[in-house]
Length: 139
Image (cartoon, rainbow, N blue to C red; front, top):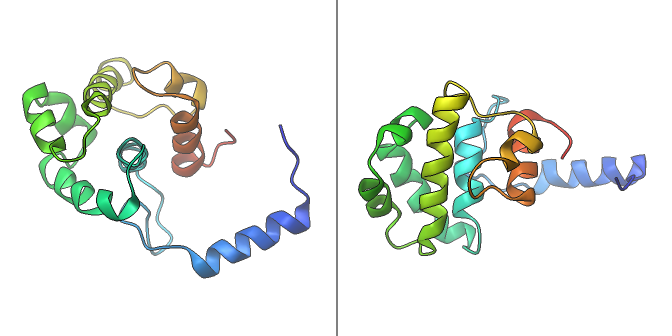
């Protein structure tokens, strides 16, 4: 793993604190990130711009506010909600992976990158991002 010098790390974190964007999948007010929301955002943001994803993300959560709600939904409904974002394999894989999390992990998103990578459609980057952002784990 690449070692980042302490001073550089501190400067980057300070820059982020000053310039971060207010995004709906991040928490405000010091709350903990919701792993489902973080994972959803990572999937939606694959090959899609942030400004394009924002309204889809909000509408998605109105229809599927929890991992359990998505796991119980039929695929046709999931694809309809994804309509307009393209790359429908992302929606299919996300739905399959969420169902697996519901069955295998009791609806709790795994907190380590290795377990996440074992899920359908979850690659190294997405697994690392979810483990890091949602759980504060090194990826």
